[in-house]
Image (tube, rainbow, N blue to C red; front, top):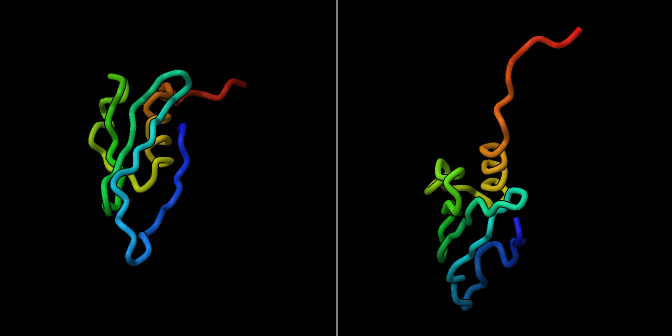
Length: 86
């Protein structure tokens, strides 16, 4: 993830609400997508930037870090169940 959260939480009374937050999600050298939320939305919505991550398109995450973990899991090869070598 290329950005960190800043200014999280509710704005102080009298302060304008945040307009939008967006964070790029990268897995290795691949831009997987980005997550964004507008105004007072509670969740970040994933927008895919590479076809390998289309399965996450539109999914909502509590944090950008949660979206990054999901993208990493999708990118990692499936583990095969097998015997432990003796």
